[in-house]
Image (cartoon, rainbow, N blue to C red; front, top):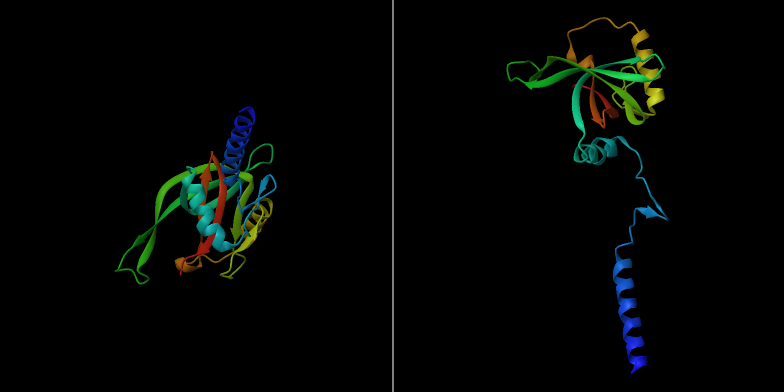
Length: 172
């Protein structure tokens, strides 16, 4: 009788362990860490954006300026804009200024993209390199133009009171 109780307990314990371990097989997890997907523009603008929004992030559209505090930490000042569809406008839209500005620290681990010169393909860079690239942009003298397609705009995602993602693009 004692042996049947032991066998039953052993089988129940084995069954419980098998059931609990079945949920531990995660294909995106290697050892104790998660395997990060390849960082591409497509990934950043789709899955990563969805994750930030799902986690409570806020999306801003507009232009930006980088400043530094007294300790040299970068801050992103966002001049909020709005893309307004207008069939009477030659391009079918225009950019409206919301007259709202907000400033957030740029996370050291932020994902950023930048457009160099007239290229339409964004480059993924670290937040440090992004700050340098924006500073270099400011040094370039560009003739002012009313053609909005030559203006650079950004989709900026803030979570936890700091900028976590900046996606640069031109409007076509």
